[in-house]
Length: 109
Image (cartoon, rainbow, N blue to C red; front, side, top):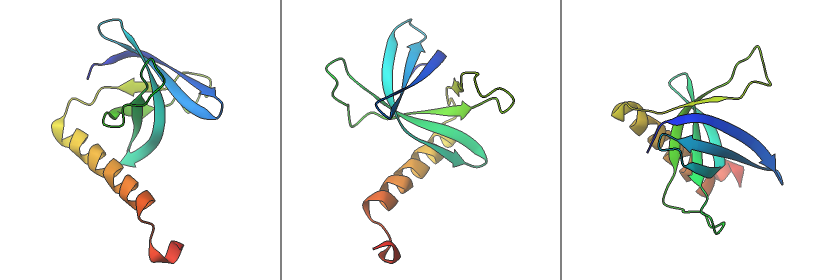
């Protein structure tokens, strides 16, 4: 996974997408799966979308996510997670989110 130089977030047909420009200059379109909080920091989970509009279900990218609260029009900042423990904590939180969505509590039924 590469660092992003910038991101553009667009809302198209109610699906939020991000266009990532990678270090090598290539651009990857991604669907925003969720923004989650782990240990007081926000992270974004992205699903790259291939050229033929099929999602690669096995590939989810995680980045640190931040917005400027003083300027809501400023583009959010995505930062590469280079710490393995931090990345694992985010991946575990995302897995827990998926598990809770697949298997709702009996109270929710």
